[in-house]
Amino acid sequence: MATAFLLALLAASLQLTSESSSVLSFVGPFLSNALIGFAGVFVGALCLPRLHRVSGAVVLFVLGVSFEILFFTTLPGPHAGFPRGVLATGPGGLLAVGLHYWRRRANNSVQPTATRSTAGGA
Image (cartoon, rainbow, N blue to C red; front, side, top):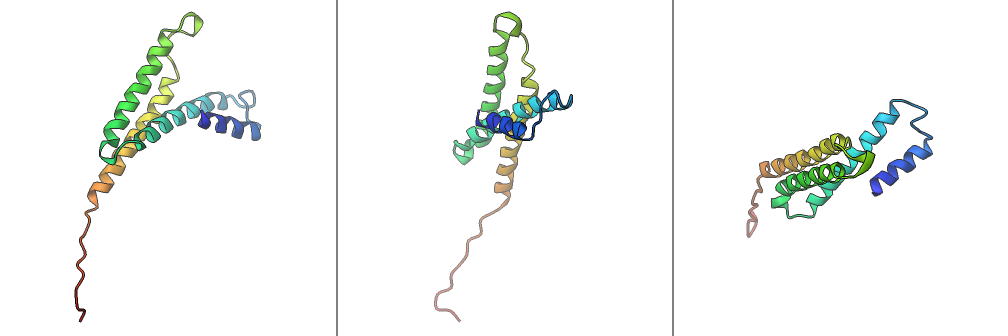
């Protein structure tokens, strides 16, 4: 919610509207949904212990996308059907999963070195 609000404030301050640009009418909602997917999965997984962050990010991604699909396909009226927002929210969530995986691999490749302190100096 906060991300979408900040994006809307930025667009309003720059006077960017979908009427001023046909590209913006597609890119704006896509980036907004992708940022929401990324922020939800990334920050949600940060709440977990480091050992479980990658698997937690995958679970959050699957829960978020499946909730969005189930919620919008069961709506009555003209809004029912496959939600197009999933096509943007999904890649944002996948990017967060990939980032957590990359961070885990980077942390595993660094081996801690034990330093010995010499008593009595030379």
